[in-house]
Image 1 (cartoon, rainbow, N blue to C red):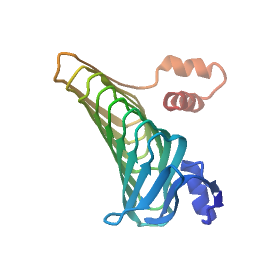
Image 2 (cartoon, one colour):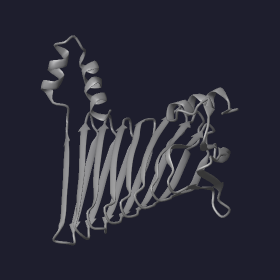
Image 3 (cartoon, helix red, strand yellow):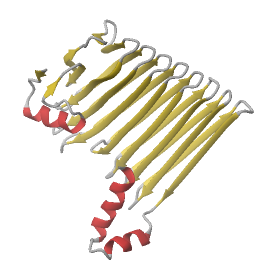
Image 4 (cartoon, rainbow, N blue to C red):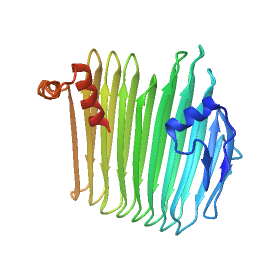
Amino acid sequence: MSELKISKEQQDMLSKISVMANDLSGAFSLRVDGNPYAKGSSSNVKITAKTDLPGIDIRVKSGTKGEKIHIPVILTQSGVKDLVYNDFYIGDDCDVTIVAGCGIHNCGGEESAHDGIHSFHIGKNSRVFYSEKHYGEGTGGKNIMNPTTIVEISDGGCMEMDTVQIQGVDRTIRTTKGKLGKNAVLKITERIMTDGDQYAETRFDVTLDGEDSGTHVISRSVARDNSKQLYVSQVDGNSRCSGHTECDAIIMDNASVSAVPKINANSTDASLIHEAAIGKIAGEQLIKLMTLGLTEKEAEDRIINGFIS
């Protein structure tokens, strides 16, 4: 175990998106202000820098169980435009956790941006849990984050994604694409909150090629003030498969939310469902909490935190 030699400001930012703020062990890669800062491999996970593009290759040996891989990114200088390509090669019969995330602290006058393109190649019968948190703060220029996740899951594999963006991101386009083999599963849960004049766009595109493959996508969001959100999902069922997409949004103030779910059944054995619900906080919910002594603002916050937690 070694200590990260970064500034207190950088440590504070890292602690908001990752558990590796002070010490680290095992496989990890930390990127700071658009440059690789530190990385380390383990006996089962090898992390190497790309030679043709900014970013890293992460290779996990077949049969690896119980390992955690941390790949956070932090930006603390205004005006940084960071683009990174990370490729994950997961062997067969693995069970690993990958913790990603990006934090931006921007107190300057320029726009700061991070675009991360993550590609996953998941081997047969392997399970991957992927956690990603995006966070922004500061009184300066805009904070921009555009994550792209591309997933290919081999027969019997499973990937579960949990993504969170609840503060300080002014503009984001979040893209996830999946292609599944036989008996493969992709589960996605995202939680988003926007306020002010922020804009958030989510795009899911999942192709179910393998027999008995399946996907389950849930998006929960809150739009406040003058913010705008767009949710677009598409599931293509090309064999005997199951797919479900769900968008639930709370809209407040002068915000707007659009949901565009699409399902394409290209096999008589495909079973696909989409759901979308957008609305304000129910008045009876507020009244019930306010009778317990909460103010209207406290009641709203309690409902919202429960909704996106």
